[in-house]
Each structure stands twice: as C-alpha cells, then as structure tokens.
Length: 113
Image 1 (spheres, rainbow, N blue to C red):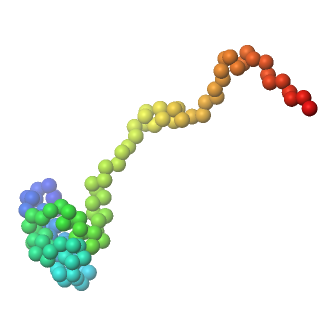
Image 2 (cartoon, helix red, strand yellow):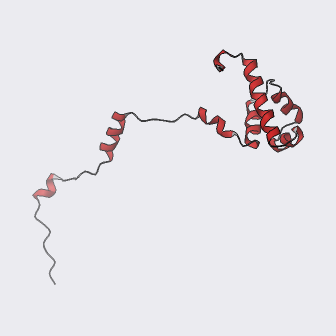
Image 3 (spheres, one colour):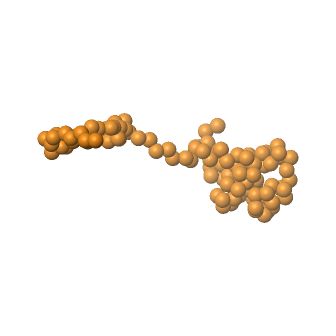
C-alpha cells in the first residue's frame, strides 16, 4: 500500500483501526484504556473510528498501548559533517605550548639543603 496516495481521512481510519486492534489484542475495553490514558471513552471512540482528535490524545493512547516507539521516525538526529568533525578534532588535540620568553630564561637553580 502506498500511504502517500491515501486521503487524510483514510489515514485517520487506518490509525483508528490500529489503535482498536492493539486495544483488543491487550484484551482491554474502551473504558479501561481510556481511563489508563487519562481521556474520556468518547474521545477514544472517536480515535478508533478515525475521527479527528488532538495529537496529545494519540500520544497518551500509544503510551498506554506501549507503542510509543512508532514515533521514533520523528526524531531529528543531528549529524556532523566530516570537515566539521576534523576541525573539532584539531581543536581538542593536545598541543604543546612553548613560550619564547621561557626558553630564554635560565633553568631554575637547584635547591640547597
């Protein structure tokens, strides 16, 4: 199935069907799941029918169904470009510091006992 060809309403119905199937697989009633998710039963019913609900509602239900991993595709991972990585490495490389005025001074005399 090419999801890009589906209408928004078809995608909402698909999400609703997924939520309903997962709820039933866990052998939970709408009352039980909605209570655990902190939403009303009518809101859960709307979600399962593919009606419009708040995004936070979907997150709450997915959390109770232990399906939050589905949202990992939205994580933005910062990647460093190879040239920037090399620059960072050079910045933090340990460098030997030698002051020109210290090189001209006599070494510290030994302590006398």
